[in-house]
Amino acid sequence: MNHLKDVPLAKAYLLLNHGPSTIVTCEHDGVANVMAAAWVMPLDFDPPKLLLVLDRNTWSRHLVEGSGTFVIQLPSRQQAELTLAVGSCNGGETDKFERYGIATSRARHVEAPVVDGCVAYLECRVVEEPHNQQSYDLFIAEVVAAYADERAFSNGRWHFPNDDLRTIHYQAGGAFFATGEAFQVARD
Amino acid sequence: MNHLKDVPLAKAYLLLNHGPSTIVTCEHDGVANVMAAAWVMPLDFDPPKLLLVLDRNTWSRHLVEGSGTFVIQLPSRQQAELTLAVGSCNGGETDKFERYGIATSRARHVEAPVVDGCVAYLECRVVEEPHNQQSYDLFIAEVVAAYADERAFSNGRWHFPNDDLRTIHYQAGGAFFATGEAFQVARD
Image (tube, rainbow over all chains, first blue to last red; front, side, top):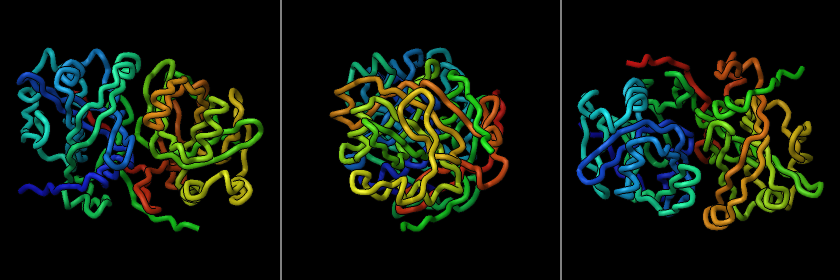
């Protein structure tokens, strides 16, 4: 069963505001790839923009520069092993979708696969900034559509129903944190 | 007792890799300010660089453009109330240090105060990129020194000894997550 619901664009930044690790998918001329990316964050609210650091040595870099689009997925804790796996090999040498048996659907507004089972995803179009891309491996993109698993995110808030559906935060060397306890602070 | 120890620059990105929320301090011509910033992430490893989104309507923006330096602090869960408070008023109208009774020390390599009791901080020098600053409120900075509370971070890894010293992740409207359970995934 598909639990993904549209997230209004003005609330899309809330999917990333707590700093989760992500999976990036992209496709150019019929060639697709999937990789992990911890260095993703919001840049603006409405229309929503985000930042992605995309190393020049990755196969995805080549595809994203060709297509000008990508998808940012938020893997759940159940997908941490997959996240590490797709971040540990090169898509120019390995078809990672086949190697790891990754089921995908199609993005609606950009040409790219979407990894099934993620708790949220954002379809993105690159805002061309050649100096940032060439000097810093830094991509600015506009979010053109966003979706989230309604069991974990609704009305602009994450409310993880169980540990399996929590988002994750990468440290290094295969070590992650799950998103932890929610708490509320009162304004003075 | 001061538990802060130097973090080697090549490991400074590990302080931010899991996407925590931050407190930014800055100072120009003897005027200091403190604010909250959730939109901070690593940009490069060694020498370490980071990204900070700094809205043009903030008082800190004026000070950072003047001094070219700032400090990124990682507040602990104990400091979540303080984090929300300094993110909810304007430093041009209020001396937030005085209003909230914030104890500070001095940064060593840049002219800025450092909020006492944070679990880590990074001293930063802005890499001038006027187009990013003006078009996107986006600042690129080089990390020139980094420090962490050895009870919570050592040898390049976070290992929170209790809930009070966990880092935090901002949602919105005063709602935070604590950094949660650590888990290890094996590479295939």
